[in-house]
Amino acid sequence: MIIKKFQGNTEKEAMLLARDELGKEAIVTNVKVIKPKGLARLFKKPTYEITAALDETPPKTELSRRESIKAMFKDNKDILLDDRLDAGKTSDAAASESPTETAKQLEQRISNIATLLEQQIASSKKDNAPVEKEKSEPAEEKDDRNNACLNLIREQLLANEVDEKYISQLITEIEPTLNKDSSVENILSGIYQKIVLKLGKTEVMGVTSGKARFVFFIGPTGVGKTTTIAKLASKLKLDKKLNVALLTADTYRIAAVDQLKTYAEILDVPLKVVYSDTELKDAYEEMKNYDIVMIDTAGRSHRDKQQREDIEKLINSIPEEQRDIFLVLSITTKYKDLIRITEAYSEITKYRLIFTKLDETDTLGNIFNVKLLTGAPLSYATFGQKVPNDISRLDAQMISKQLLGGGE
Image 1 (cartoon, one colour):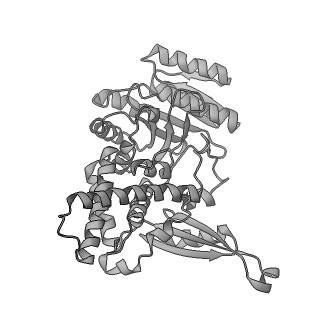
Image 2 (cartoon, rainbow, N blue to C red):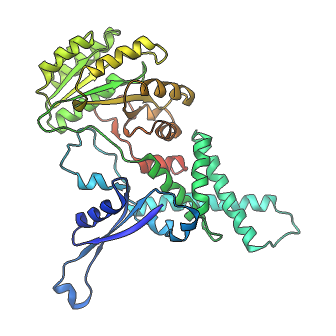
Image 3 (cartoon, rainbow, N blue to C red):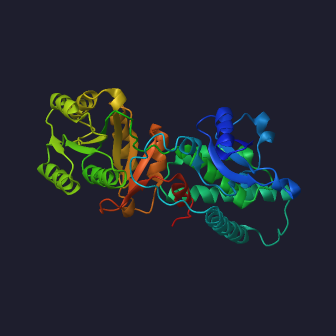
C-alpha cells in the first residue's frame, strides 16, 4: 500500500497532484487545511494537504517505506479522487448516496471493534495459558497477539460469509506489514483499509450530454429488477429533473409489464413494450432524444444458452457507446449460485453490480465475494420495497464495517 501526502494552494490542486502521481484508483484518506502561523496569517492564504493511498503491495525489500496504517486511518472519509475532481461533469443520475459518518464517528466505531478484539484475545490467553507459565518472551508474545487478532478477524469474516480464499488473501497481504508491536487497532485498521480498497470505486448512472443513455437491467428472475428500475426512475425524474423513458422486454410475465406501466403512469413517463431485438432497434430511433431510457429484461435462466443469446441480441441492438448494463443480484442468493450466474452473464457483456434485499440479511459477504470474483464495479443497493426511498449508492465504508463486526 502506497501512502503519500500532497500540498497545493487549493484542495483540487493537491488532489490533481495526487492523481497525477498515484493514478485514478487512489483514495483520499484525509484532507487538512494548513493555516499560516504568526503574522504570516495576515498575508498568506491557507494551503491544503491531502493524504492519498493506493493499494499496491510492494516487494518485501520495500516494506520499510510503508507508513503507519493507523495514522492514515485517522479522518478516513473514503473519498475517491475521481468523485471529487469530476463532480459536475457527469450527473450522478440516481439515488442519493447513503450518509457518510464523520471521521470521529468512524474512528470511534473502529476503536470499539478493536476494544472487543482486545478483550477476546485477553480472555483466550487467560483460558489457555498454563498456570505456572506467567511470563514469555516479548517477541513470542507479540507474535501470538498478532496471530490471535488475525484469527478473530478471520472468524468474523467467515461469519459474514466471506469466501475463505479471499480472507486468506487479505491476511496474506497484511501480515508482512505488521510489526512485533502492532496494536489490535493497527491490525484492524489495516484489514479495514484493504477491504475498502478492494471494493473500489462505486459507479452509478451518468448522463452523456446530447445523447440518450440506454440502461439495461439484467439478472435472474425474482431479484427485484422492475422495482429497482422504478426507484431509480423516480430519482431521475423527480430529483434530477431528467427526461426519462421506460421500456420493457419482459413479456414473459404480464404482471411485470403491468407493474412497470403503473409506475410509468405515476411518474408521467412513456413506456414502450418490445418483443425482439428488431423492435428494440426501432424503439431506439423513437427514444434517442430522451436523457435516460431504462430497459427491463426478462429474468432468464443462466443455464439456458438460448435465453442468454436473446439477452445478448437485445443489448447489441443499442450502440455500445450509448448503453449501460447493470446486473441485478439478490444478496440472499447462495454464493455458489452467484458464481454460476455471474459467469454466465460475463459471457454476454460487461456490467456493473446492483445488490437487492439487503434488508433481508445481516451478512454482506456476498458483495465482497462477487466484487472480487468478477472485478465488476459496484453500483447500487436496495433495502426494502418503498419507491423511491429504499435504494442508495453502495458504500464501501459501510460494507467494510459490517464485515468486521461494526454494523449499524
